[in-house]
Length: 263
Image (cartoon, rainbow, N blue to C red; front, top):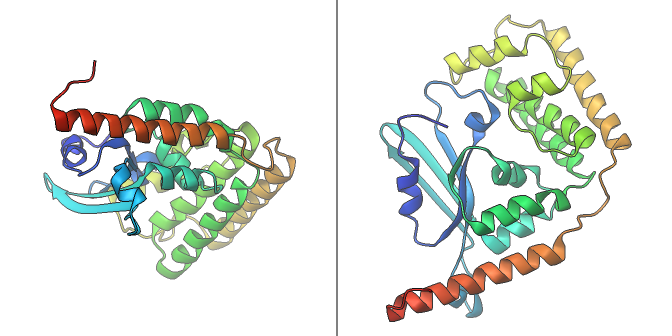
């Protein structure tokens, strides 16, 4: 967890009840630099009134601010949208949900975490393959370590998920769980020292090409061999969770308006 920064304050300032808020990005992935911003992600609950009228509700809230000299980036989705994203083989939102760097939690958050395994499918491999390819192109264009580490992290997370059925986003932990190039700890240390530092001559180009190709091939093989199902299995439970959380929030709002404290 980033130290010396008030993360609970920005969550408390939000206009809607929060289901959860966690730290994502480089801090979650295990290679923040001294000047990294803090990416907060989560879910909130829109009031029923916003959902039943004619106007299309704004389901995503984004706040960028500066606290204690650190740039904070908070993005949250209404719970219904967040769950829809969970059901779309979106590894990114599952990493946010399962992040151990928890700023705010709730009973609904705990229930979501418990249901996360039910939405994992073999097709999440496509998410990690695609994300790695995007970051690789960014590295080829900029030469910066950050997108290169994102590339390795995505490939290793995908391999580990296909093999174990677990979402693990922390790169140093992935290096202990999966075979990986021995130079990665040095690249992590270099990235931690300089947010936009370059690769330089730390790794020869042909070696990098070989290792990235090998990891991509391992992901394809793990995808082929995985025991994860074709389709998610938690739709009914997730639907009930969203309905229950929404109605409970509505009751709480009604009681608050009348001054009655829930018993």
